[in-house]
Length: 182
Image 1 (cartoon, one colour):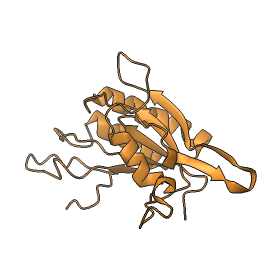
Image 2: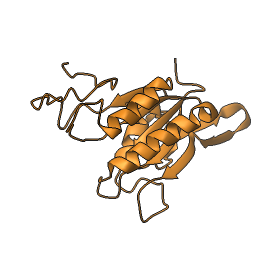
Image 3: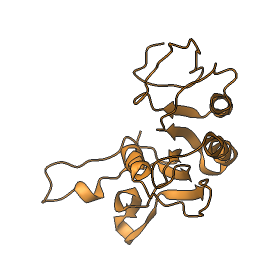
Image 4: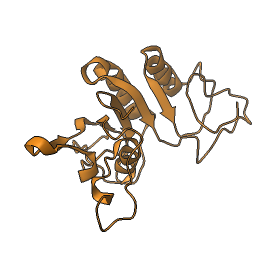
């Protein structure tokens, strides 16, 4: 499976439509961006492009086509996991990589609302945030659960803070965080 027809919502620092996020049809020499929707949730700006670099990096891991690592000058072609997937860019982090829970929650709700329009099957939340209360009470975890209940797979970062359950919060619920011990 190469992601054809699938939408992935990248909730991050924005996505800049770099060359590896374009589609290309050689037979009729046409091309276009696979960043099919962009919206900004960062207060004080309307710009949805990536001012921090992380969101574009994540989008490349997900859907990079490998165009700019292919040819006689390269020893390897680097493609994303689903190189034909479409990207739904939902910018929640500013130029310093900082954001708010309310922006992330609004972006998750937008992804749910756009699910049918863009066939969103996955949300990428490669964000760092500590867990302060049970997932049953935490508003961000509740938003993630709403996405999961809508049939969207939600992938959350497991790095940075990791799964620190010393407070006994049982903070993950339905969030898939690969590599974390339950």
